[in-house]
Length: 228
Image 1: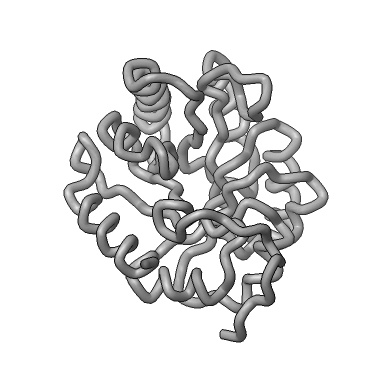
Image 2: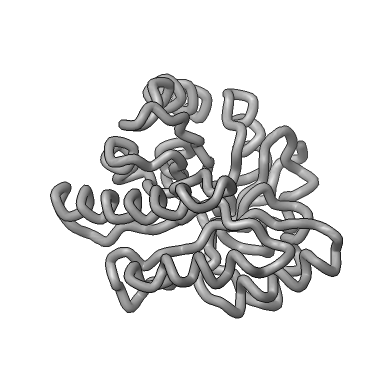
């Protein structure tokens, strides 16, 4: 099933988004075993994203051949596990987190690529910069050493297609504005298994899919991970 799902998704994404941009498919691998993840990579997945620093660390040496993303809420004391090992940290949702990534990256002699998370639906249950403050955050944090802001990430609120399409359009406008000012800006990460098609139709060029690739989740550690 994993192989068939990957091939189907990649085929559907081949035409790119509504602007003709390539869409990067990030496999959301929360609770997935290394065997499942390696099967997805063998089928064509080039990018994988973990939600928890512990899983990122535990699976790191057991998974081969894909760029590593971190896509979950990140605590300051877990930043050390990601420096030098991530292609992209999606969920930079506050200044102190950006500053910690910056400081640790500088000490490690590297530059960490990040996305700023935007709370586009103004939901109390979600982190991220409020949309009206996101541009200023981009300007402010772009001055930090050791990090490179590659774009923006958001999780859409619950709503109908008209509302969600409008939220995507707002995110795309922010993305385009900042891209015009910085050649580093490249990614607009919107869309999960339930809404990715709408997001791509409104300009997302990176999507994060878990269930659409692997099926329903099982609790992490519920079964022993197969040897790989």
